[in-house]
Image 1 (cartoon, rainbow, N blue to C red):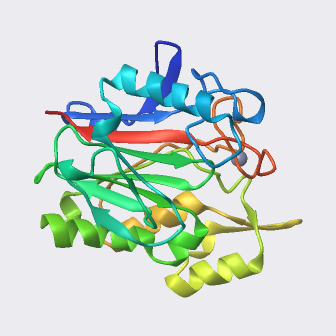
Image 2 (cartoon, rainbow, N blue to C red):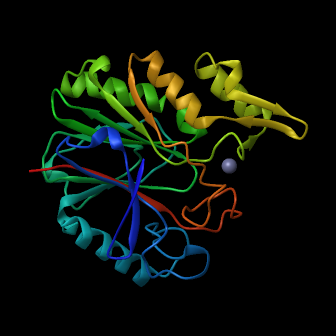
Image 3 (cartoon, helix red, strand yellow):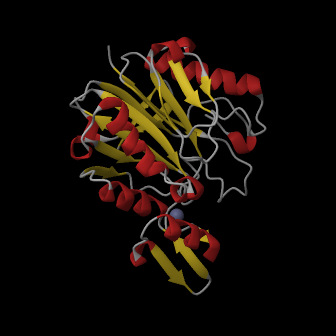
Length: 259
Ligand SMILES: [Zn+2]
């Protein structure tokens, strides 16, 4: 990923999407007005931050990328495997109970929010369709990665081998200590490669971005770009639910097909 900065907002972009005709960004926590644990570019409405600050943060992000609120659709993320196909008529809405959205509508921006869970961006250059998914361990155990690929196949007619996938900053195996029940849940959902669970003196550590990658590969996706950034290791740039004891903000990930 490449680090960029504009109007005080620091964000990253996947190099694999250069020239694709998409607007996309993995926003950091830098460039907003929120204070304290939400400093500064918090886009989460339900984390305890001042809603005026959250609104101003959105205003700055939308201004930077040249969209208005009526062009943006977000999910109300619930760690599910529900993926929804959206069109221009969904602009300005929040889609309840869903953790993935995909669209073929130019000028419709998908905006998701993260603090350790895995951001997954999918792009079908053949059919010009984009999608985002939110993949925490519950979602992964529930099949959200497979569901996202299947949604492209069902709604768009995509071939998995044509899909391009970007895996954004998330908590890495360096920091993601989990209980055996988490490993068991993920392993129950699909065959969990042993190298994706690290055994250390103080317990088990799960490589969640690696699990998402393995699941994508199992679905036939071949082109995958990994950010390799651990949110918990870098709270100077990222919100991390785990590293900050649950009291933190959410950074945004956005994508839109250019008109
Ligand atoms: Zn880490």
